[in-house]
Image 1 (cartoon, rainbow, N blue to C red):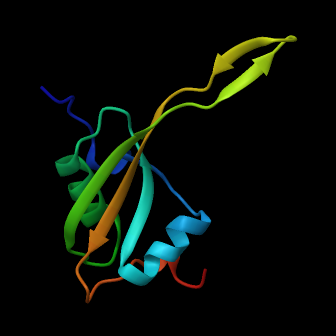
Image 2: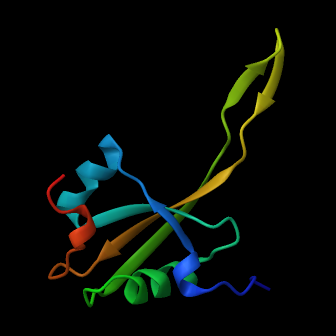
Amino acid sequence: MAKALNPLSVLVRPLITEKATRLHGENKYAFEVQAHANKTQVKEAVEKGFPENVRVTAVNIMVMKGKPYRVRGNRIKHKSDWKKAVVTLHPDDKLELFEGM
């Protein structure tokens, strides 16, 4: 059973990377989301969390594995895994948060 999350706390931050910026042309937006969030919770968070009335048509979620880094010589540790969501909006909708980038 999925953990109940507040719709507004599901989205951690928007991802502003080269690949995510390229997806804006296809009306797709990328977000870092909570580790226990599912597609339904992400959809509700985007639809309720922004002042514009946007309609979400699809949500794709993937787990990004933590990258290794070195500590004190040759010891290798890993950063925490995190979850990324790519949200597709209706063709008529836009998020003002990403305009002008």
